[in-house]
Length: 239
Ligand SMILES: [Zn+2]
Image (tube, rainbow, N blue to C red; front, top):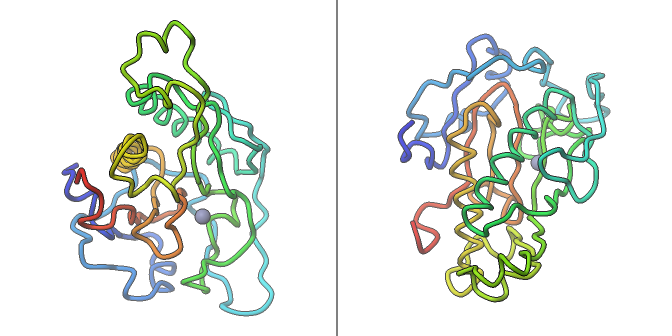
């Protein structure tokens, strides 16, 4: 995939089989910048679940299986409630986080800080659609907690002193940082986002600061369409 494509404000297309769903979305959802027809890398067990809901009043979430998951390669700061199929995507996500963190900080984070997984609700901007959170098919990630380097590793590390100790990387504090240690956190967050956008086998929807209401967290889900809105064009010193 061309890197420029992955950074489009919106890169949206809908599976042909989901015409009903596509019709429920506002025309604006098919934003300019959708330069490639979207084909899912694979099928996903929740693809066939109905997402269209009444725009007002009582709303029921489809009965889907939910499991409590604490994390395998990496831990979540509190257990998440997700569908088993999404748990499998989270396992792949943890491996990417570990790899990027190891490149940048010479270790994996101790914990992933999330601010929500299962939550039966509509999509705020499109009230005719069920949020993927309502299927246990989404996670909101706010940051990452790192423990200290071992004493031996710290002695040999080229990292700034403060980053050899424990620290936390937060979307809300570090996404746009341009100086000091915080700039390294920005690099970590942005490299992570790039990798996840490139990995078509993990998440289909990736939202971040470019998307309204997401200045302080990433939203990742596995909806039956693709929407990428993470990087604000021209923002960030190293882009
Ligand atoms: Zn979310």
